[in-house]
Structures are given as C-alpha cells and as structure tokens.
Image 1: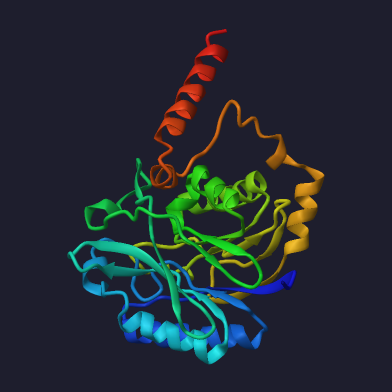
Image 2: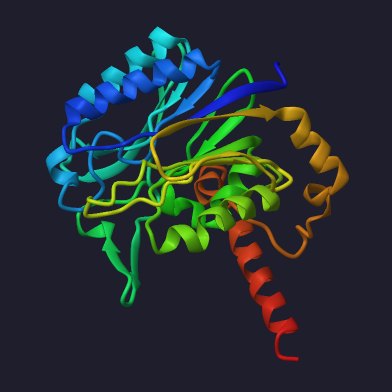
Length: 305
C-alpha cells in the first residue's frame, strides 16, 4: 500500500443554476487531477444553494443526473471522488443531505446521508433548522482505498466526537467532512473542531466548504482545510474559489500514535464508545447496557466530591 497520496479540496463557487454548478464541478475535478490529486472532494451542497427553501427544488434521486455526472468525472480523471453533498429525494419522498462517493472506475461505492441535522439558534446571529425539510441518515459511512480507510461525515456531523471515535476505532486514518459553516460558527469553531477531531483520534481530517458568496441567503465561511494527526494545518485557504491540495502521509499517523499511544491507554474498563447497530447485529445489547451503566456509575462516584 502506498504510504502517501495527494488530497484535493474543491472550494467551489456555487450558484443557482444546477447545470452550471455541475459543469463547474467537473472542470475543477479535472484541474485537481492535473495537480496530481488521487482523492478529490467537493463541498457540501455543491449543485444547489444551501438553504431549506432550495432543498426540495434541487433534490433528485441517487442515482440521478448529478451522480451520473460525478461518476463520469471520476472515471475520466482516474480519481477517487467524494461528491460533497446534494439534496437527495428518496423513493419514499423523504429528503436527505447526501454525499455520493466514487472509485476511479466511476463506480459509486457509498452514499453518506448526513446523520446530525443542523438545527441551531444563536440569538441575534443565526437560526437554521434543516429538520424543517430534511430527514437524518442512520448509518456510518466508511469506504476503502489503496491508501487507507476513509470515514465520511457532512458539516454538523463534525461536532459529534463519538462519530469520529467510531470511525477511528474501525480503522479510518482520514476523516472527510464536506461542510458549509457560516459567518457565525465558522470563525468560532471551524478550525477548532477539525483540530480536535484530528488530535483526539490521531487521524487526518479534511473539511471542504463552498466559496463565500456575500450575496447569498446563507453565507459560507470558506477556509477549506487539511489537518494532520498532530493537529498541524497541512493546507488551507481563505474564502474565495480555490483548489487546496495537500499530502496525506500514513507513516505520520503511525508516528504520532507511537509517540502518544492513547489507543492502548484508554480505560475501556470504565468507558467505551459503541456502534449500536454493530451491537444489535451481534446480539450485544447486554454489553451496551453494561457500558452505559458503567459510565453512569463512574460519573456519580467522581462528581459528588
């Protein structure tokens, strides 16, 4: 397995024309491949403006026109392609914020549906409720490459440390989050969350934002970034349209983990993060209840002091 590969983040300007957005995405995938990228990532809602009023209008099935375009782009440029996200309309009429993923032969290998919906209210700043129109996904998404296992989340998913911990426990060494943080949460939390997920799990973390459009109803922060397992910024940008390319080094992951061996030092006799679906499939409900009880008992033992 190669120990190094090049990751490209496409901080793309997104407009109101889906046709133009798709054409722009295809062109930027080609440019990224020309820069030596092996894995290319588009931003959240790359084919649609971001907003609850837009999701029903732009939603389409998967497979559908947008995924067919991305499949061809991956094949034409011989790259792994994480398709940011698009509004997806499922067969039962529900809408999801979904990320399709493609191999270099154009095969779609996975679709990640955003697990945690962006429902927030910061008084005087921003209020947003994705749940007004979207449904949450219910599965983790991991796909394999010749370089490493990769875990995928979308935007708000990055705030939930347990998801990243499960991905790391399942062998992922790169976590990718297409996301569109805004002008309130972006400057406050965007980089801090990326570095936190990277340091906590000793993995690379990549985030991909749309380019900022100050005239849009929802203004994205930008600053697409790659963070190392040590917490260093490998590559980043400001808020304009740009292709960010950085080297991902699997040897660096192992180096960090050997210097600070938190994986072997965890007190799994006291706490553990568990994939509930995995427990159910393996008949491990009793184990799940045990760990929940253990965590509760430890909390009450420590804090009354």
